[in-house]
Amino acid sequence: MRFIPPLEKATLKKRYKRFLADVHNTKHGDFTAHCPNTGSMKNCWQEGDTVWLLDSDNPKRKYQYTWVLDETATGDLICINTHLANQIVMEGISENKIKQLKGYDSVRQEVKYGDENSRIDLLLEAADKPDCYVEIKTVTLLEQGEEFKAGAGFFPDAVSTRGQKHLRELMAMIEQGHCAVLFFLVQHTGIKSVSPAAHIDPQYAKLLDQAAKAGVEIIAYNTHISSAEIYLSKELPVIIPDFS
Image (cartoon, rainbow, N blue to C red; front, side, top):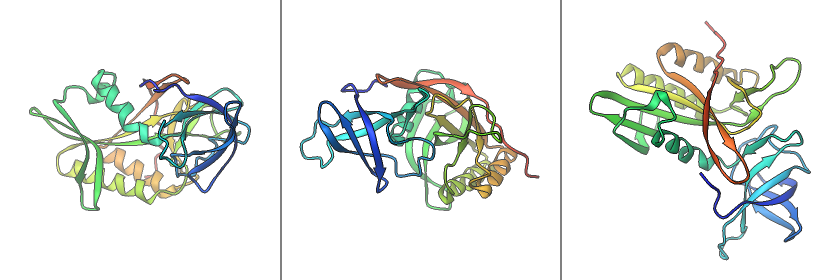
């Protein structure tokens, strides 16, 4: 996926009210951009970071620019726009980059399913295969310190009752004879592996272990990220602690 129009460079001054970011560049001086990520964004930004913005070219929008990428002091790039995740995975499927999701005839998005009023990100269907329910989660949390391995990425970055619900729904699909996949899409160039964040949401970590043992396939792929484009790259290891 290429960024069209090309992203514009700025310096981050602060993020606040979850969906706003004050930035500065030579073209506009100080201005406010829309932040499309309402999550905690833990370890994803610091004041003074280089950021990359998309111009909406829409005079009716209150905030003309959308924050898309953060460039850390160490040079890692992070895509903070979580709305791009499904499109990136869809492109990966169409280009046969995801070995676990090959061989299906059709892909539908945002299909209602389950007993807890959920919508599955992707439903893959084929005449000769069980239906495959794919839940996509964006991973941007890189933890550092003596207690963490280098490149250790985690999900979620805050307690996620919604994420817990999705794991229960995927396990229910397995019980009904379908295929279920939890797809961790890593959008941080510094992350080399993915694990459940037991130090943040221990209930999610326990449910993920249960889901894996129940037959839910847990996979992770990283993304190639530059100021010009983002696309699915290669599979990463998923490390799940045993809670049994």
